[in-house]
Image 1 (tube, rainbow, N blue to C red):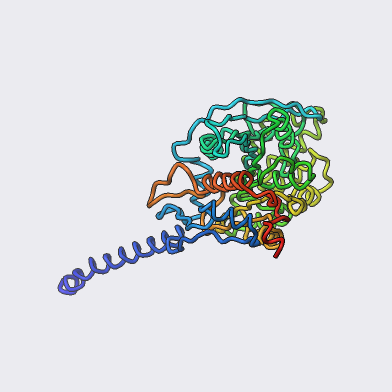
Image 2: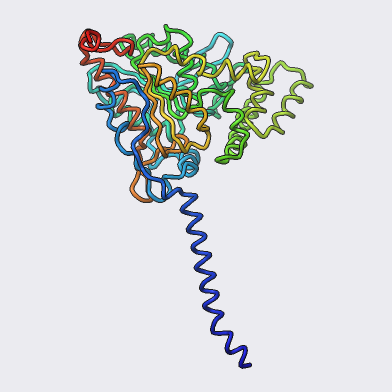
Length: 427
């Protein structure tokens, strides 16, 4: 008994030590997972020193000031991405628009939502933002609604493409849906805006997959750049061929995100199965659906289903021809490319594309934030984010600066970056 009474007083102290060690371990994991020790900083900018770029950076302070995400979770790219994807935006508004239907030559019907400005633009000009959302997205998504409401209040008309097949209540009218780089529907929407509003000038905006589409659209034909003031692309990957290898890696849980996006694509395809597989033999339908059900990655779905909509002979050909990396160098209008270093979907190796482009071409600014995730970019003090994100403010701020430049520029200055100020030319 004496031995027991001697040992027992030490047991509580030992358990207390284990509890402290456990708490310390949990706190360490939280700090690491939430990336709490990561600093905040202004975006890392790559650009050439031109009169236009200096004006844009001076007039759009969000690009040069420190981006501060919510303290407790905003430095985690995963949480930023998850909040954008699942919870949408804070106090998401419901802008009122009119849905337009555009018949295509192949029998498809493109749809977009048109939102008129809530007041005059600060320059007094008629400006329309033509917006292309991310993969499988449309005008009813929270991040699109928040951005459109903000842009409307600043005097912009907004036209938002609904990706073919993305809206659950709109039936397909041909055996085809949106693909990674098909620009047909976006071109149809832009054509409608130009015809309906002959005096309007365009700001082109693309989110994620939409960024690939708008940059490809502008680079496919120089005529597509007519009446376009500038283009903003946010969180795109630039090359599907290069990205496919990184999407199979578990680094940053990209393989898991790949699986989730593939599952969403399955649901969209299956919701339109009767339209997409109409006219095919029963045997072919069964084979295609069998491969679709067992697919666990976007690449498998792209190879078995998506590439066939446009007759691509292989997945490699599909990714090569639909990626903007082969067209973006033809874009002459001012171009702002925005990515986040902690975006779990876009591997760091892909960012050499916009960085190299901005270093070589005077019309391009590449902005890389430390934090923001994929289409997150939430701002806030400690826990609760603000309704408007850094991304919303940057796009509208850059657009405002571009419109101001066009309004106030001297006759010898142009938005096209190959031309600069008179003084610089004389020098």
